[in-house]
Amino acid sequence: IICDLITVDLGTAPSYEALSYEWGSPSSKKHTIRLNERQSSVRENLWRASYNLRDAREPRSLWIDTLCTNQDGVHERNCQVSRMVDIYS
Image (cartoon, rainbow, N blue to C red; front, side, top):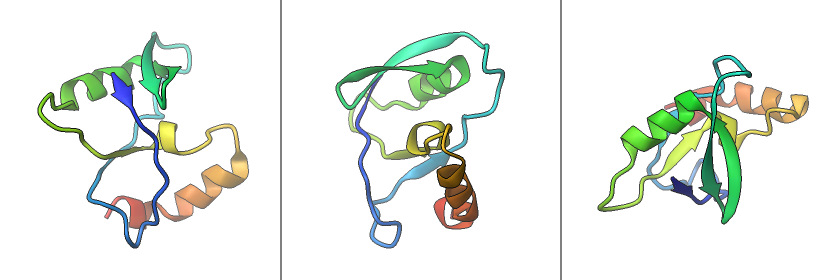
């Protein structure tokens, strides 16, 4: 699975689909994806969702919480949580 992480303004963002995949046990099985040309480890539930949602004919734009939000940064997580209504609508 190959992904490119880009930064966009929500007001002018291209069409995208939002997924929440940070949930689950931190000790669950991990899989590797390619994110911005680097190997990145993700939980099995996200890998399976990404695998099933991919489209071989054209790229898809997805906002995925665990990839788009620094999960170790409390301030960033709190900012993102306060914007969930905008992100998921």
